[in-house]
Length: 386
Image (tube, rainbow, N blue to C red; front, side):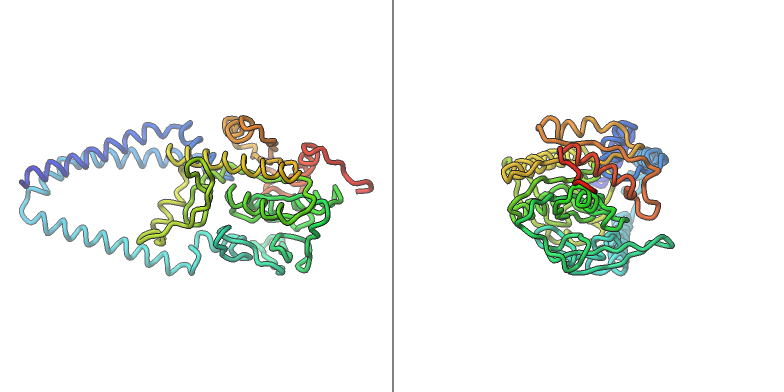
């Protein structure tokens, strides 16, 4: 019996080692680019990351394979059961200590999110995950760089005045998306919405919020369209990094069920609320094949849905894809999400020299160029005298 158990344990070790070695072999540059860099990073990771991860997988695999014979001797020796029990208890205590330590470092929001701008000037929301606090102006500063004022109006959207209330009867452009659309690191006048408003002389309602996935941005955009009587256009930014956000389950999110988009609640259950699970499931920067397919499917459905509903309201849909000069070919992604679905999209290169050093987002000059490309793509004329 003990010999059979020892053989089974050895087989498990060897199997795990073989699987890790296979993963290390598959984890080549092309796979890393498609499954990690593109869907999980806005700013490019260190070139050493790929080598480090691949080496770690290979070393772990070799260790498992080489340790397999030793597990046979361990299981067969007297007292192995008690030693195994002690190891299991130690492992369980280590997990408990890790979870407790992570919770000591944060409050209701995990510390790896709580420092982000959207959580410092926002609040949780049962439908959108989080929204900005309305009628509030907050000045935030990073290190010794200049302070930035983030002002949120009566509708809960970034604006130039806390007491501003959009006029539903005015012709309006809706700007949706994530932190690039929200204008992180920029004063409102220099943000995409601020430049469009100044150039075109029309009302711009900016429903973007930092950290949003494509689904959150689309839900906010559709709510804004429903409140406006004369929407002209819907401009929504899309970053490839949103592919990971679109399958994170720590928040409510849109999922596909029987081909239809439905709003699913945040993950629940015994372990769903643990910080360790959150890190392992939502924060490791890689999308395995199944998750990548799931994300591409739901993202394509979301952009298709929001574009159709914008057109139904008489608004021109336009997706804007800022792309760093360090990012490689995104053609496959643009084709899958936009071109093959007949959805207007413009890819706008952003020179890394125009990335804010204190914020990691496009600077005022890059954003102004972005606004000009949006105006041309929509066929809108700059107001006289502006």
